[in-house]
Image 1 (cartoon, rainbow, N blue to C red):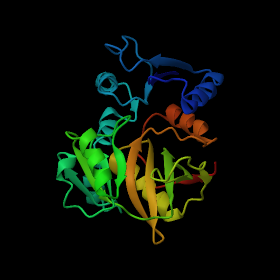
Image 2: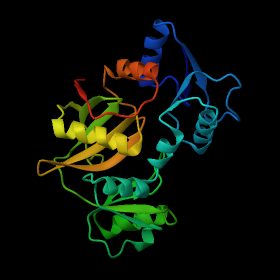
Image 3: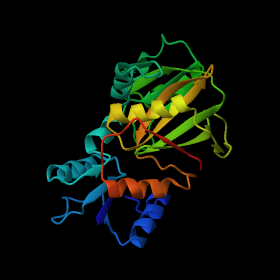
Image 4: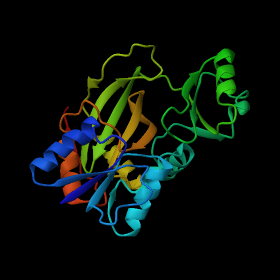
Amino acid sequence: MRIGLLTANPGHPLLAATTSLLTADGHRIEHLAPNAVAPPSDPADIYLLKARTPAALALARALEDTGVPVLNSAAATEFCQDRAYMAQRAEEAGFPFARTTVLPNPGQLDDFERPLVVKSRHSRRGDLVTRIADAAELEVVRRRWFDEPIVVQDFTPGTGWDHKLWVIGDRVFAALRQSEFAPEPRLPDRHSSIPHPWADLALAVGEAFDLQVYGVDILEVAGSPLIVDVNAFPGMRGQSRAPQALAARVLAKPSVNTNRYECVAS
């Protein structure tokens, strides 16, 4: 089988480990740069979409138009980049998602009670994700991101550790990661067991968002889960069995997510 990697970084640890497994099994791995002007005339059997740039999404769509499966699809990947649409779909699906307000720019934040969490509406590398607790922090955001469409979420005090749930097909991985608002240097990730209802929730998110390889960021609030983000094809660092799961999912080709799950220890 020929497997294409649509990414700027084929040496990413998850992709590199998965490549080793697949090539050892006799499969051929091909790299497609996300800035390529057109898809190959003789495409691979399936592509893994790890890049999220407009050019990469356009390439993925062109491949899909010729009948080549892409994991995750261009549409699902692009959808997860818009945090406003993400919150709306999560609300429609009945998921416990952080209350989200959409604003055209940070100049509209005066009437919001602080502390609050402000993020760029469109997720990308180097985007705005910050906690604002006072007028000085608000002014910094206004100056740097004055014309940036944003989303605003209530700041929810949790345990100081975010639950990172990663899903590949029907396999659920998990870790605890110190909050991104914790002071530097942050502590390393911790192993985490997965409560069964939370694993079911993560799989339901994949079905609602049409994702096969994805992450769900959850805060624990009074013992209950609160989703704060969903992202397509995360790095899943520290999950030693993720490459095996990804290799198996690639060989199976994309399919609709199920409500079954397998909890996998790191």
